Structure formats: C-alpha cells, structure tokens
Length: 298
Image (cartoon, rainbow, N blue to C red; front, side, top):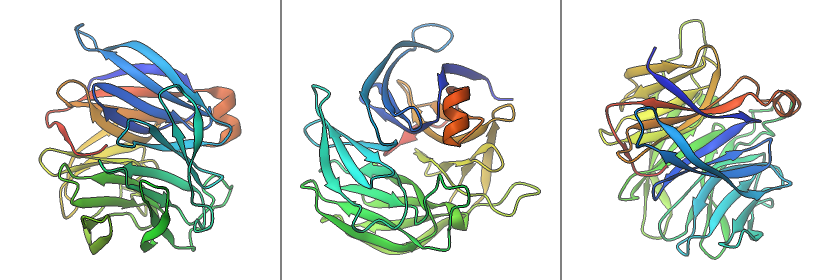
C-alpha cells in the first residue's frame, strides 16, 4: 500500500477539499463546518500546525471557492444557496440557486473573476433512495450572484475542475461513470462538450462513479470512486495509471496540495449517512505522497 498519513480524524463527513495559498481547506458536511488547515511540512512525517473552524452552518456545507476579494463561497446543499463568509467570519447569502435546482447542490469551482460553477445533482442525494432519473445540471453564478444553467442533462454532476488557464472545465458525472470536459469562454459560458474519460469500473462493479476529482500537471485526473473505495488516476480516454485504497474505507474526494503540490489530501469515511456519520465521527483526512504535482483548481 502507498504510504499514508492520517492528518485529521474525528470528523463527521469530510468533503470539498481545496488547496489555496499554502493552506488546506475542506467541509465537514454533516458536522456543519468549514476547516482551514496549516500543514507542518518541516518534519520527516507530515503533520498539522493548526486546524481552524472558519464558520459553522445550519445547512450542509459542501463545495468551496473564493471571490476576488478573498471572501469564501460555500455551497449550502439542502437550501440550494451559495453562502459568503467574509474575513470577520460573518456568513451571508451570495446567491439563491433554489429556483433552478432540481436536487441537492454539491461541488463547486470558482474562477479567478468570481464566476462559480455549481453542480446540481438532480436528486436529493442524502435520501435513502435518490432518484437519479432526473438529469442534473451545472449552474453558473456570476460574481454579482446571478444564477443560470451553464450545462444541462448531466448525470449527477459532482466534482468540478478548472485548468490552470481556466479555459477548460471538467465535470465528474457520477451517475454515468465518466468525466466530461467543456470549453470556457471569457464570459464564463460553456461549449464543446466532450468526454474526457469513461471510467473503467473495478472488478465486480457496474460503474465507477466519479465523486471528487482533481487535476495533475500531466493532464491526468485523480477521481474518487466511493463504491469501489479507491482513488484512481486516469489519463484522457480512461486508462488507469494508479490506484490508491484506504484499508477498506470509502474515499469521496481529494485535492493535490502541500508546498510542491505532490500530496494527495483525501477525504475518507466509513459512513456517508447523516445519523451514522454524526454519531460515529470516523471521517478523516489522509495524506498520500504522489510523484506528479497538482495543477489548476482544486
């Protein structure tokens, strides 16, 4: 097994990992919190210098991003809103997406100009039996908070990636087992829809549903496969280059961070259901060293 280091444990359900300006951020969906973490990379063994709770939420926080002024944007999954957290920790509404949303909002990525792309899963994903027959969509939210549909008829759009030049947006379609690419115009609109990769399922499984995804400098994508409990690194076309497992635990997302961005920071859990997750609190952040550094967002 690849060397792994547990950095933080005792969480309810960690998600939305981000690396930004030398700090690691993530959401604890069922814990109702967003964390900001400073890593200690000076020691032989990677550790944590500080773990700060940025804000508490009554709703379930998921995808994270930032406006040009440094304000944090947070997806409120169940109410269908984007919330803004300013430097003082004050939480306010940035945009109301509930009028267009068909299901739970989940992941998000934000351009340098503040344009946000938010995945609407189509289904209420924490229901006991989510109805994935309803097509999902990726919503675009302008820096001023105006909401529109950027891409429709997606299969439970989950993880979102922007390339370093922000000219390509990748979206993981969980219900279709594939990662889809779009060209991003200067005004934020999307075009040129195409398949980056159909993800080969693990032996014994029907589908490899991408959850959280992140990009590396060779153009490969790390994709969390929560059903087969693995992270896979895939090239365009779907060739699997590397697989990481977590001793039987489920992995739902990862971001490439650290000083050289060669550390996979993975969100690992043993229960995604709210009641079990909040009672057991066995979710954690696990670090895995890799050879190829991260690129783009997250």
